[in-house]
Length: 438
Image (tube, rainbow, N blue to C red):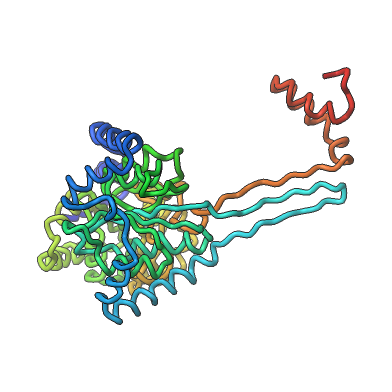
């Protein structure tokens, strides 16, 4: 299941290449299908939404049912228990406290020559959150509502919309509705998959268009987000989930095995990698994995992921472990070593870092505060977790005085003329009363 491979070696390189093959991107056939859906929603609006929703999710849904009503929200609050409410509010408080540090402020500078420069930071006008249905609505992704909605609210986005596939009876799981309301989302639409993304991107009579679309989804949702990117902003193109554990001889095999399985159960293409300095530990992890997997309802999915994209690499020292970890640039990086903080400075590429054996990836997924929407498939080399910044725009502000323009004019004119842009140069000359030279 997790054959131990020495690193560096040819065998290790082959496995690394295999793990790296899980690149983000849709099958051309799927993209073609998604293009048809996008075109249909753009042309037909609500009629297309109803047609697709009735075909795939809720056969009896009517036009007026596309948007969740206030009555449905009230009924949802009556359906959930106080324990659920306390749990959601506690998680939301942690997430909000963490993300408030990401707020950016506008700044302005006035120079002695009268030049006024600055940057205005403003939220986008609207954002759309995609939340998967989860097994017909019976396993609502509450954490996705919190992780996607709270940064947008903190950024100050005035219009937040949530789209999610309805259940067969046309309803939405009450836990999801309550979580969305607690976050401050008051526009919830019962549409899913690629047609939901299309509705958010282009707008329909029932679903107002938005400026930014965020949130996880299946390959059809990912393809739709890719195709509408540029029409609207998106968070990222997320691939299958992944975890990488760096461990020394102090680590516990049962903790590592449980954490590897926590990602392997997501998807047959999920990645689960162990890098260790201790071959005996790797053998114990392998043994423990097999025992723990027998108790998992999703054991078949986990076994497939471990077989195809799992790995255990044996390295000489922790410096070598971190070199390989940075090369793989994992979504989740766990450090099961004696002094995890000592390795933090060596992390260059990772979506999120979990320090020590008492910090499983799950605490980041649900409760600690940092965002769980993270770069995958090696994209942590150049991208970051979802945050408040995804919902903010920066606008430059420039004001020149006569002194400043007179001082810099010749340089601006020369640069413009070097680029062959005579009108640019002329726009400066006219302000210098150099009319004869226009």
